[in-house]
Image (cartoon, rainbow, N blue to C red; front, side):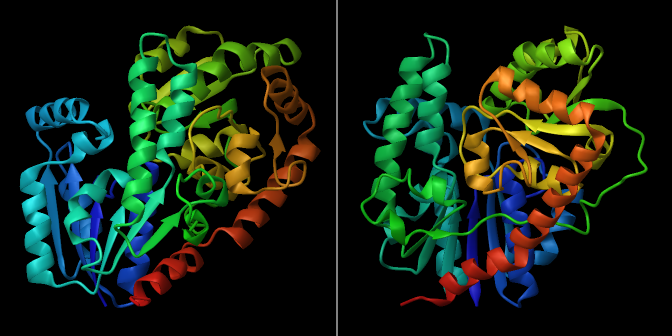
Length: 395
């Protein structure tokens, strides 16, 4: 099958959730013999290493459209001035990229088009009902933006609330342009503002178990770990809540307890956390597994955002005892108390963390059960096979 894939970011390196999802899906589909033609937008230069990692998966062609800074600014301004156009769409939309989409559809003649994320749907609006197409919502951007608006500083709320409203309307409108739709979890599916949302197929992420393996002999360099893209608002919010409110409560029980905040592009608020007692902010690490291996407990205190947290899958796969919130676990679907601990307030999260630091045997049992859970539940091949079946259903 010839599949044209549209991405808003180049899917390598694997430092963001959408890139990781796209890369492993491409790897599976290419391995199944499908001819992939990839068009990826990028707002930064793509390295030779990244091109070498993705190129072999794209037998039908690999195309990168570099988003210009001036064009991005104009796109945002046009979106703000256009009724109903989300800023997300304006930022990623450029007419030269649209002309390239038109050309690829004409020259490559795909059997199916796969569009990742609502922000890319505009490029396919003219082809509604003309070409078999699948939209991967992945996360529900409107819900994530609404949650962000609820906790943002007062001066940001009007713009964020407007974007949430526009995204919700756009998510519903774009639904009709595509033959099939996918999403990462049922929790997210329920947030899609469309009467036929139950027809959206759930295609979860997987975990590379051969890569994320336990390292029981690694020295422990920090008690707690939180990681992710530290320029992404839900992660910024979680890191600050963890360092400013939760960690001090843990330190009342365990004086000297330490926290590593690891991940690319730390925002100024995250960088400032390094001034707090016991907190280290590493920034980007060449191999995130070193951070997992050096931690006693992993914690993901997510209060905003949507989707399945890849960081939790990775930590569980590396056999770390994990603590998170119900918001994150609703997508993960782990059993609280068996696979991980779940709490939603700073005191309750601190109590869960302190208890695991105090009881090594309990932490070990929880970690072993967590590894088994992700090994049995989150498999890239099984998940992407669901996507492949949708592509084959062009009726």
